[in-house]
Amino acid sequence: MVGYAFMGMAHSQGWRNARSFFTPPIRPRLTALVGRDREAAADVADRFGWQDVETDWRSLLERDDIDLIDICTPGDTHAEIAVAALEAGKHVLCEKPLANTVAEAETMAAAARAAAGRGVRSMVGFTYRRVPALALARRLVAEGRLGELRHVRAQYLQDWLTDPSVPMSWRMTRERAGSGALGDIGAHIVDLTRYLTGEHLVGVTALGDTFVRERPLPEGGGTAPVTVDDAVVFIGRLSDGTPATFEATRCATGRKNAIRIELNGSRGSLAFDFEDMNVLHLHEGGTDGDTTTRGFTRILVTEPDHPYAGAWWPPGHVLGYEHAFAHQATDLLIAIAEGSDPEPSFEDGLHVQRVLDAVQTSVERGSAWTAIDPGVPAGSPPPTKEEPIP
Image 1: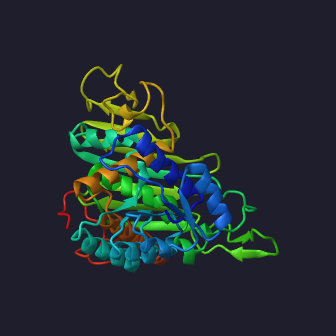
Image 2: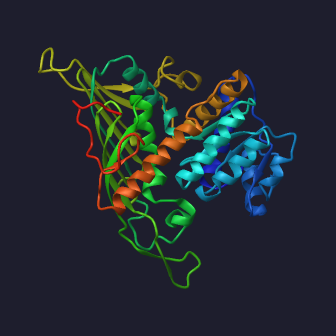
Image 3: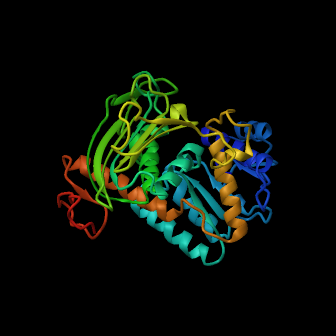
């Protein structure tokens, strides 16, 4: 694994629990952890059970005892590491967003396609797909329980950058992160919308803002400019014509990690909030039945027949943030063992990257409608539900 900070620790926990609570056909061995600061990396390695520490990721490519490379670094390094790893015959798990630019993501997707022909697998880490309540939501939509989809609304709200005294980090520079709230957290709700609905965005119109334009340097001695967004809001249409709204911000005071997504259909609706992550709200029946008792049902997603939940604790013993990383690791191990293509793929990551690019382009062009599907001319108005969707 390359990287040992927040995501590195989350992924380490996931690999460790994948072999403890699940029975994948192949068993992960935590062989080497890479970090430029050997002492800090060694501390994380010791705490999570990594056998070795390296300071240069390139050394992993030459080791015969490593079959998979997990990339938990800032976005500006994803393409170089992933392409080199795939060409060296290593399976790859890469954190989201896949890259900082569409060009980088296209290169990575091409490398993944070539590697797949040699039996080498790749996956992008949109981990929230593996939350049991969201996996159940996908199942319900696929079964037609909501009927014809009418609306999608998605938010990802955090507040950790509300305070202007929070110091600069790589997440606030476009060169390292690609974008701000848009790529950091907005990428998740773009991917979740595609995952839940089976549809993709064909165009967007967007607004963005940066509320704190200078932040103190972490080591003191002045400030530095913030070169990414603090918040974005955009609307779009899915490939079946469904309208969708999105909001991503790291300045929503009081919201810690509120991933909120609601789907409304002709026969029912579902709603989810990650700050109550074991619960899915479902409404069925449309406008039929007794109006005095019509409403949402609260489903506690901890039953053995719920996605992933049966591997853990008795019903009602809730899961937390880290559990989705074990589900992600397990699914990847199964795909590698079976020789199948895991999801979400680098192609899925490329689609999200195209959406992020379209949002940024729309912001720069005064909220102009910006097409994502190449078959829709840029600047065309969004199609209506009655018009054919390219």
